[in-house]
Length: 125
Image 1 (cartoon, rainbow, N blue to C red):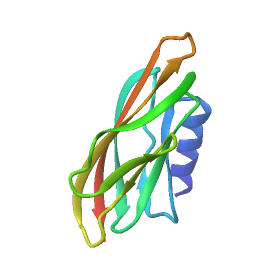
Image 2 (cartoon, one colour):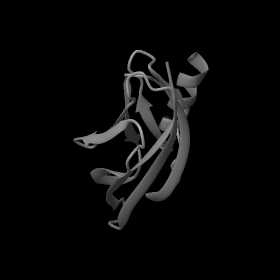
Image 3 (tube, rainbow, N blue to C red):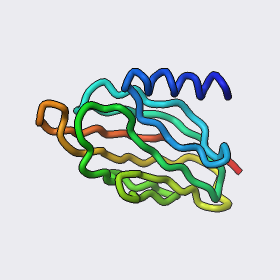
Image 4 (spheres, rainbow, N blue to C red):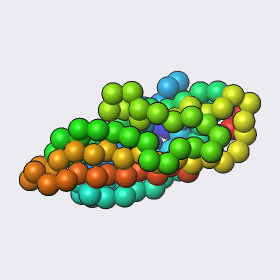
């Protein structure tokens, strides 16, 4: 996974990523490039059943004022703690799920920030 972590670091240094926090390697996937304060991105992750991931945004110009779930998952659970969205896979489940969240605020010029991230989730045993 060294290459995966290096890829995330490179994107984040450029200020172009939405990343997720891996809890004991229970989540795996790639970062989603973010090109502006008004953008949408989609990615794929694998999550071990009964565990979860939290997600953050790195180096986007402006100020995030709110994070909210805009599409609830069909099987797992999603929510927000502070400005950190999270996904929790249902214990014993094995299969697909998906959800989306948005970071809202003001961009570096005082305009609206609306960054939407949608994840296709594969829950594995």
